[in-house]
Image: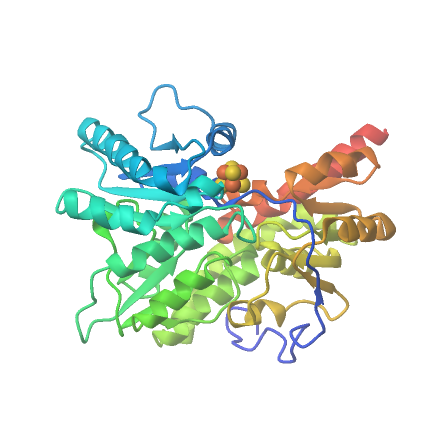
Length: 429
Ligand code: SF4
């Protein structure tokens, strides 16, 4: 039997789920949650993100997202100057004025996100109240929501979590007796199309996505909703969906061929898809993925890799690189570890891995220097210093910006890790 027909192909014993985790709290080197706007604004095409922040926030957004010259931008920063509490009434007036100007000029905006940041003058402002006030004013025309993209949170992908969580109360109720599958987490449109086709071929027709391409078409949620997480950083959104009656389908994340197969299997089991339909539907994409992976496996097998905590994608990608590409995991660090949503992934990690949670950047760099892995996945700010010490690095943020989910992207994901190693070989010649 192969992985397609054998439901218990994955190891029955727990991988490293019960191993002690090295917990660290110290200086962090990660982007803030505003970064999520870069991919969220591309996904939700009728939404606008108005960051209420400082010049630093505006600079971060501009350099992360680039400046769109030909298109109407769908994000901006309302810059607040330092004020005392007595001046906050003026701040609210100013915000209302900016929003009015924006919405008068842009009738295409259906959802406006007021995005909080971490400067002290913004913290003094109650953005939830501002969103309520503006929602009343624009009722029926624009939905105004707020969430925090502040750098005080643990890491930058939490920006998507807080954004999607703010959409959950707005989702219509799924009528009693109906059933639907909800895919949660931003994925590229092309991958959404691939997933929809495969779910359709499995006979699962009611499939919807959060966030949707258009926010005026939010998917319904209720007791008949089962959801799969497409991204491993959406814990708060998942809990908000569960509070509305939705059921979480536990699965590894759809990264790599094996992870994608098991992710589909979790939905197929809930929908009681016959085993032969499952095997026939996924045989071709699985075979394609495995074949495409072969050449990268030859380059990656036996290489040692460490992950510094950055994007929260570390565990599923480490699982993929170890099990499908033969890499040796030295340390896998994550910004935070939520056993509830990471359990199926932890079950697949080898017991030899050093698992760490949280960040103490100096201690972690010391361990990397001592371990001297072939490749270290880390934030942008740490990559250059490591390279200068002769250690190869991979920017973690590239993993969030690239389409890496699903069968057809498994080889692309492996290739991202081959590139720095090949570059090293070429330089060494
Ligand atoms: S939200 Fe905070 S961390 Fe992020 S850019 Fe603004 S000031 Fe910097």
